[in-house]
Length: 430
Image (cartoon, rainbow, N blue to C red; front, side, top):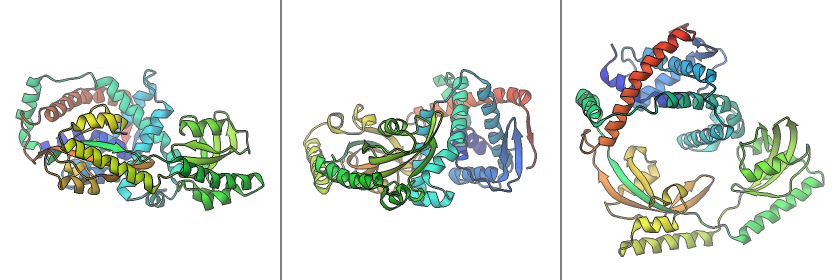
């Protein structure tokens, strides 16, 4: 019988298992472990999920029943996918696929240290990785939406939270040290002089291409898009919704073989050529010239943040200044609030900054990567919460989440019993 701790981890770790499936690498001669409807689970994929679960939840890989439990979770997800495909009320847009795929890719790039390292591990450029895994990403989102549709309305009362805590308090791990953080982000402005200088360089390349220059050769030599430069700028076949608006409008407006004028997007300045059109899909290639802020812009931004910090230290409200000055659109409206975060969730550089701060202190301006560009931020540490055991007084919201998941899981298991009777599945090897 699997122990109570592992049971809880499997309940609360299901979403993690799904997410990791997206980038599972299959060997050419992989053994099939299980078949579920029209989907298969292969041995390498299964072993990777066991390893991910063991590593991230710090459990003994030899725990009796663990491998079977992980396989059951994977089979359950395939069953849910099969039902979601049948349900006409559940659908996924191309934009949703693009956004979630990009988010997971950014996580992987941070995990492996660089975009180049990720490309080396998968043996293909970023643009091809996106194409290869789009279908898996779509399936994952479809499965997630099916579960949300079935169980998102399930809630718990305070009494149910208290009953859950009384039953499982001894099995819950300690709450790691947490910090309540706020920030103000400023992105240095790109001066018109810098943009003009980049456009002059890009125009020279465009003129050479119009005179018969080799696009692929120029892309390999000059493009600053590491994901496509080595492939001669080739982005492969794509549908609408996979590019930023400015790039997409220019690319889809081209005739086959034609070159665009200079196209400005959040990524920089592009030269685009349409290679081929197949119905609603196009195969385009591009040369990217990045536009970076100059040193003066950086210094102006840093000085502004220092001035803001001085004003706050003199009695100003961090929240008010964040609403007025922060370029982080997601947090500015709520006063720069980043949340109550575990120290373990923070990346190494950021956690180093936080560890030096005392409660109520504001950091010096520090450089931070944000999307395709960078900025500078002030961080305000409002409160430190030391590591502690869960309690109803301090951790009600977390316990409410656990209890809700527990209740949803009960209904989830009942639903799975039905799916296992209605949809074909079979374990071929274990």
